[in-house]
Image (cartoon, rainbow, N blue to C red):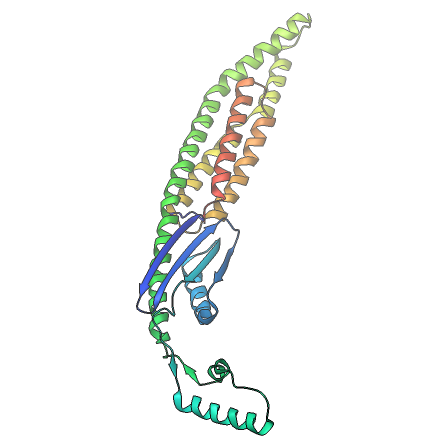
Length: 286
């Protein structure tokens, strides 16, 4: 099975410690490029996420976002009364000694350790986040596979059209050679030039060799067969398929350069159109 490089997935999380959501999206890229955006206090997850992406993906520009909406909603403040009392006593002593100033209660609360918040179980939070990340990446890969099926159908359909064109050209070649012989003979007759039959046959043989496209047609059939094998094998095959399109183009150009007939020229144009359509879609394949 082949996979597209274009996909999106989202996983929402609702837990006692708050709400969060994972979003993963990707577009075409020659290599694997991963951008991860996390809240600052969860940066420790980044190496783990990168490793999981690396193990499961080969190509694509990946964007992974974690949004945490209310992770502190269920926590409560707690004042260290003994420490606050000491801070007040010491502050009042300083004011008394200086014989100036006043004590701001908010300044007391800002003193380190006066306000304490219950410690959160970050191990549990991280585990929950990673569990839902795995669900998100599974859904993401499934979406890539689904789009890959559509790409497979599109590519194989056009490969079949290429095979049909090749068969048509191969079938037309004997008639084209006869047409070319008659055309040459008629031109010589119009010019009232008498020719030696042996000489005429030699010229026709040389011309037939110049316009012979059997080798190009055989290679096109071979390329179709090889491309279908690559697709059937699946995996990260986008680069190999892109190389095959270069080979297709080379044969199509040669076929066009040898054309002496409008039907062959038209077939060459249609062949290039099909190859370009395949090449555009292959850019989406991992």
